[in-house]
Structures are given as C-alpha cells and as structure tokens.
Image (cartoon, rainbow, N blue to C red; front, side, top):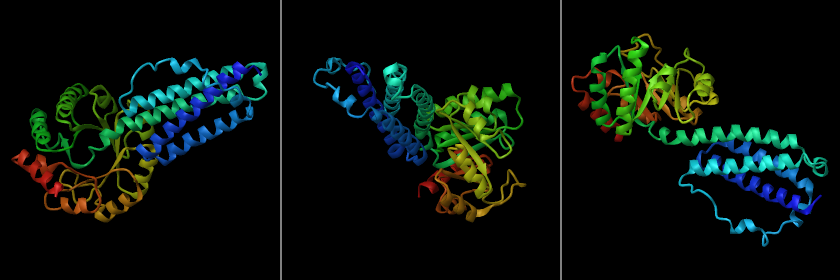
Length: 346
C-alpha cells in the first residue's frame, strides 16, 4: 500500500477519533445524555477498531514534522458550543468520506470496507442532528421553571389577550402558553405571531397548545400536546430542531413514554380540582412526586393551582407551576402574577 495513501488514512483516522470524542463529551457532560453519549462512543470504537486493521503501517507512514498542514491557518472561528459541535461533526463526516473513497482502491478494499464508512457517515448525520437539536433546546429548557401561565381563550376574550399577556410577562412569568380551541386559523395565527414577538422581547418562552402548524408559522418557542393530539414522534419530525415540546401526562406510564419519545418537559395534572377543566381527573400531589422521581425531564404541575396551594406543588418537586384562573380570573392580573412569582421565589 503506498506510503502517501497511508498518510491520508492515518490523518483522517485521527480526525475521526478526535472529533467523535468531542461530540461524545458534549453529549455526556453538557447534555447529560447517557444514550446519545453511548451511541457516539460505540460509533467511535467501531470505526477505530476497523482502522486498526492497518496495523502499524499507517502510524509508520506518519510524518507530523513534515506535514505542511501545520503551517496552514484554520478558517473560521467558533464562539459557542453549537458552532463547535457543528464543526467537529463536519470534520468527522468529511474524514469518513475520504476513507470511504480510498477504501474502494484495490490495494485497500481487502482491509477496509467502503460500505462501513458510508454507513457510519449516514449514522453521524442523524447523530449530529440529534445533538444539535438538544443543544439548541437546552437554553429554552432552562426557562421551564417558576410561573407558567396559560392564556385560555375560554377565560379571556380575544380582544384582551395581548393586554393580559403584556401584564403577565411584565410581572415575571417565564412561560406563556396560548390555548385556543375556538378561533379560526387565520385569527389564531395573527394572535400567535403577536404573542411570539411580545415574549421574545421579554425573554419569556411562548408555547402554542395543540396546533403544530400555528407553532411553526408563528415561530413559537415550542408546542404543547395532549395524549389525544398528534403523536410526539410526528411532532418532533415536523418541528424545527430548536423548538421544545411539552406533553400532558396523567399517569407514570404516560410520562415515561413521553420521555422515551423525545419530550422536553411533561405537564402533570390535574393536581387539584380545576375551575377551567372540571371534567379533568384529579391525580394529586402524590402522582406528581411519583413522576418527578421516575423521569429526568422538567415536570410542570397543572390544574387548580392558586396562591393557597402553589407552595405545596413546588415542594413536591415541580420545576414550574402552570396556572390559568389564578391569574386570568383576577381583577388585577399584574398583582396576581407578581404574588405567585414571589411565592415561587420563596
């Protein structure tokens, strides 16, 4: 096998190992994602094992001192983990393609399989998307805490939505969700776009309930779905990778399935008797505790939460408390919101 060809393979073998190690560490230490970290580790080990079939020949051909690449300056700068992750993924993908092409040569094909490196490249495309998706959503997930207000159009009229939303985000809510089962699509999109802009300026998350198309068109921060809505896997496939998805769960099994299917947070309820959904099953604080202990996702408590019981909800392990009537049914929305936020901060 020509020495110069071995040098190319050796250089790209190093790129693959180094790049995959970086991606693996992002999954392990930044995202704390054991499954993704393991998949990257297995990919790295499998590729290095295949490349080791060349024995010492590739290393023997190495000439670090004489490599003109040392004098070539790097192009582009990376200022955050997302751009670094993209750069390292591309580095590995390019290296895989180089070895894939070289493995088609007669004197190399007996040792290395071009098909294996092709498959590894396509596997990494998927892993890169998943890794970037989780990194991009991480900042949003940090806001799933404190007060989560649901603007339900069965409680507040359409003409008062924006005014109510301004008061809510100004008073310290971290998340605002629009739940509208009545408006036509055109009206719903218009109000969603206005709320998305308002929340973006305030540093508050904006979530659309149920309507995937509206969430995408309005550039909302995410979507919230119930058990009878679109399947989570369909939602995740259609939403841009930086959008978060919340799922309603009444049981431990539903919460665990939501986590397995890729939810970013789970809303558990109804914790108490809900004045806006009187038909909802009351699952209580014990169910909230049970689910919190069983899953690693942020848990949002919902249903009948008010200033008298919100403390119990947070003590039971909720990351955030979702309210409707406790804010929207009050005469002074700003005061009601601030009181709840102050209690949560305690």
